[in-house]
Length: 327
Image 1 (tube, helix red, strand yellow):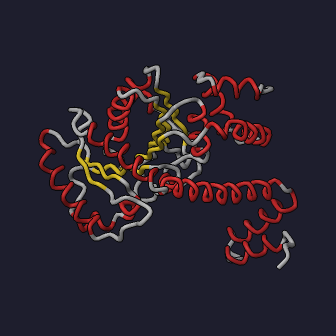
Image 2: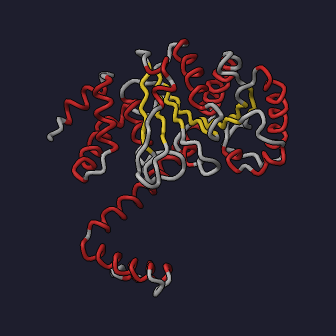
């Protein structure tokens, strides 16, 4: 099937939702010919990116990420923003399939004319995001969305990769998540710009207040990062719409400060560098594994590893030697 790249670019920049959906599908494709077209499309629209607020949202399963995003997203829309939500759905380690049911959990956002929701499978990617999430952010920005929210898989402390893609990294916590010592153990807190205790209503409101104090104490003992603002701990009830205005003001206030003193620009420069190194690694591996001679050697070495006749470390060294790289 031929792809009209110029037409797709024009549709994307005009804000056409179908054009954006087609562009995202192209970006996520693993076919070599599509990867070349995706690169050309990104280069064509690159100058029209970088102007949106990028917000990452993570938390353990059951914390209410989808409910929170719908409530906060509606608040952003009420303030006149255009919102794109990139929802990463976990893929089965057996079938590699994903449910991709986030639109059903954000029913009101899904039908709003100024909101675009894109569920994507995590695939084999670690870190709570999909392999092409960064590119998806750029396409949404080029399509005119000024606020991008990334909802991670929600599998635990490994979801730190999203922090290298966003301007504000939010960590959602349940009211009964544990005391301050338990909070200190959570390495993900070191990367959070904003910690939000969810479900702060009804019978859980007092527990949420205690959790807020516990997390403030936990953050007090952590080494501050000079490139970040001191993280705040807030409470929210997505059901009762409490705390949304304060969270909205904190996000935009933090972005204003970070932008005015150059820290936001520095963070994005570091993120682009990390993206380049990650992409270089991935493309090198893809290219090598398409080489028949190298692929055959890898399969041979893999068989020896599986049968216990060679250690994985030596097998990897033998694979590299096959490349005949200079010392």
